[in-house]
Length: 169
Image 1 (cartoon, rainbow, N blue to C red):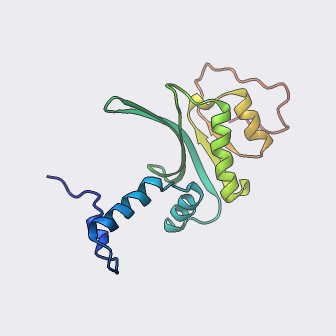
Image 2 (image 1 turned 90 degrees about the vertical axis):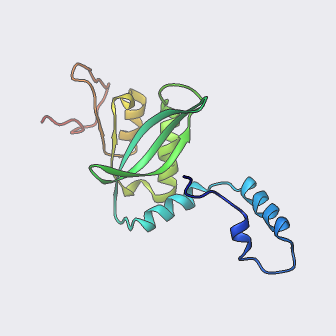
């Protein structure tokens, strides 16, 4: 049993004037057809609605699934609310199968920084597919604290790691 659908006929009831219902419906359809989601406004609204203040723990991850025959592959930046819940703030559709690259990750994070500033990032949490030298160099250079899960047998090397950047447990 369907719960509802998008219908232009219901919003028409809120319009006044002499235009016919079908004409108003056509105007609504044309508006929605050309409507683009403004990520900055969406992201600010989500942060406001969730009443988030101060600094944010962010998580970056990739998700992919099939919708019919369409492959969907998204790189997502979300704000952590609890250990079990986060809210997607920004995402980028990847026009390929597989992992994101450093440029795609930086672009997504820079979008967040452009909206809120880098000083609002308490930390960035990522899975092992996000462990790469250029990516981690970028995070260090931009003073973005990060936690990236890596395999126990993975060797991580840097030519010149800043003093105190790596700490023993």
